[in-house]
Length: 211
Image 1 (cartoon, rainbow, N blue to C red):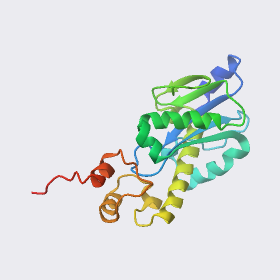
Image 2: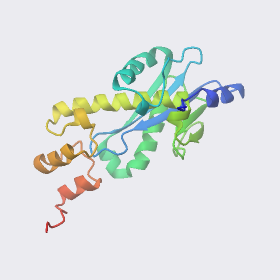
Image 3: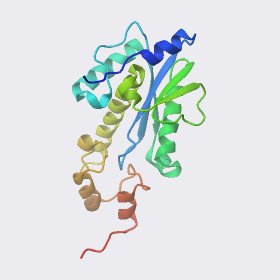
Image 4: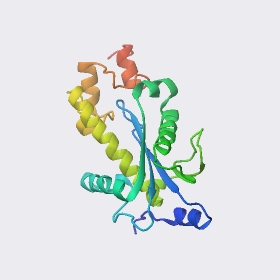
């Protein structure tokens, strides 16, 4: 039977006297282009949308529907780190920074953050718990995964209009075959992450000689 996220972690913390619990997740660690985006979501236990799940297990249509529903029934914050900053501090630190920014963007500070992954962001301004594969286990993190994914996908569609030819509206900046081919043919844009090897190689002509 497929595992679905539940509200167990949040319920336990609320029962201990904590009022506001946020789930936090990010999207976009692997792409060659575009920002990394994190979201923080504080769900209302009495108004959790039906069908909420890890964004990777949902259809695009269902993600979009949940994304549109969540701001009306939850407190939602988004944090973004752009490519230049990713290059400066590396993608891991950028992902953790985006999580902190997402928490700071919430309407009201939280008592505890449930963070997807195996580490807490440095500089976290509240107590936190890291949960490996949290988006598949915890409803608040699942909600954050949906918000982060849809927000980032929409950003990449907009960037695709500004930089046509790379297929970002389809590949979201990930290193697909068509994106790599476009990099070679069209060159590097300001939206690309220069510290990522395929982009770095093109910038500095570090191509392996062909046999």
